[in-house]
Amino acid sequence: MRLLIALLSLMPLTALASADCKSHPKEEWASEATLKKTLKEEGYTVKKFKVDGNCYEIYGRNKEGKKVEIYFDTKTLEIVKAEVEK
Image 1 (cartoon, rainbow, N blue to C red):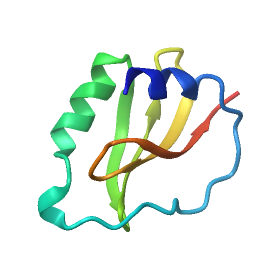
Image 2: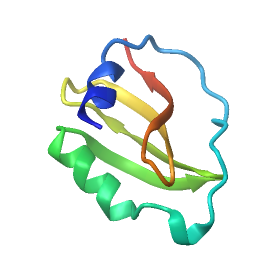
Image 3: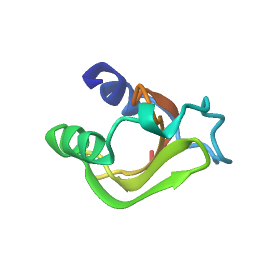
Image 4: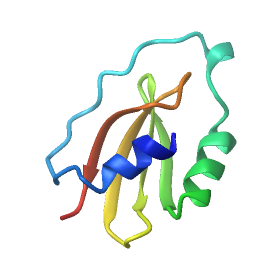
């Protein structure tokens, strides 16, 4: 997870449409609290957290203070799509 979050700082700002996350049964989803805790430990500030289709989606700022919009797989918590302010 740390490597994926670190890679976000290298990604350019691009317009996002909904991400194409794989569908998982709800009982297999990782908890929202786990994702929020991990992001906070990595220095992220989450302003908005929501479920968008089959994705967890967050809006906030990374540890450098740049705006981010990130879509995560609900089971693995891997980043599916991300937008980072330049």
